[in-house]
Structure formats: structure tokens, C-alpha cells
Length: 240
Image 1 (spheres, rainbow, N blue to C red):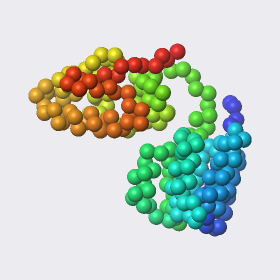
Image 2 (image 1 turned 135 degrees about the vertical axis):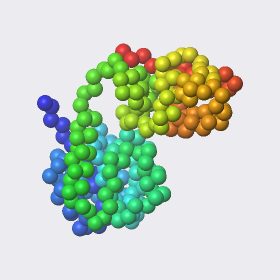
Image 3 (image 1 turned 90 degrees about the horizontal axis):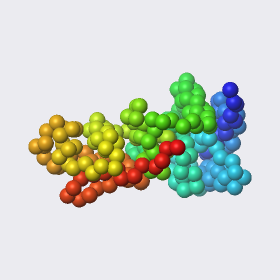
């Protein structure tokens, strides 16, 4: 089995927390780089990027001097859209959580740190990192819908850059109708018949679910609306 080197950047302004986390990280990962605030963390990421190296995981506090955690994350994602993060914070801020929910956040530690929970989460994060490094084999069940989204016919799951997009039951059923009829324009009545089993259901119920689905893929929407006619996934990338 091939051995993959794992690299972590720890960004933490509190000396004790930084030393504690560094100790445990060094027991799990191959290389751990330390930064005292968001400015140092961002500098480390940029320097590594220039040297054609990246960190598999960035572990960061949110409340820090100079450049805070959220500002640093925003800047890193401009450079590395798929960077994986773990958040460390003294408290959970609802606004920050809502912003982080669509990012590659593998976990959220709340201080004071629970060592057992932290070790479990770090070990799982390492396993995910190693899995990402494994050479990908072609899967005939995967349908690339565009450059960002893929649908797995076996699991009926939608993926965005290899991460599962969480869909409600109705959203999944609407998408399933479109996937099974690629290149075909599906009228609203057909969705009502298949998904709701009721062609007389009001249009607002359908539009609400379709809007929620399209909002979840709005960064690279592959569902085309033909006003007054229906919806279609017009093109599917060749999966050779």
C-alpha cells in the first residue's frame, strides 16, 4: 500500500492551545506547521503554494489578532477552493457556522478541548485526507453533469467536487426524474405525476422544491429552466 505524507497547518494565537494541539497533531500527521495568527497562516499557505506544495488540512481558531480566522479562510479559498479546514474556537458563533456550512469543514472544536473527541476527529480527518490522495479509478456509475457536479447512479447521490450535496427527499426525486431523462425537457406536470403522484398539486409546491434544489447548485447550475415548458439537464460531459 502506498504511503502518503500528510501535512497540517495549525493557526492558533493562544500559546497553550497551540502547544497542546501541536503535540497531538504530531502524533497523527507527518508534518505540522505552526502559525500564531491569520496573517502568519495565510503567509504560510501562499509560500507553500508558490513552492507547489499544499497543506492537506488547515486547523484554525476564529478569533485572532491581525487577520482573524474567517478572513484567512476567505483568502485561502480564493487560492485553493478545495482546502479542507477544522475550526477551533472558544464558542460557537451562529453567523460563522452558517458561513462555514458550505465549506470543506471537517470538524469544529470548542474550547476547552475534549482530548478524546479531538483525537477521534483528527484521526477521521487524516483518513479523509489519505482517501483524497488515493488515485481515482473510473467509475462507470458516475455521471459528470458539468465541471463541478457528478451524479452516482448506484447510490443516487449528487456530488460537488467529491463532496455529497445534501438533498431533501423531494429534491432528490426531482433530480432523479431529470437524471433518468437526460437531454429531455420535462414538463412541470410530469414532475407532479412522478414525485407527488398528483397532477393537481399547486404549482407553488413544485416551484418551492425546485428553487431549493437549484439554490444548492447555483454556483454551477446544470438544471436549465425553459419558462412555460419545463426543465432539462441538457448536456452531460463524456465519462471516458
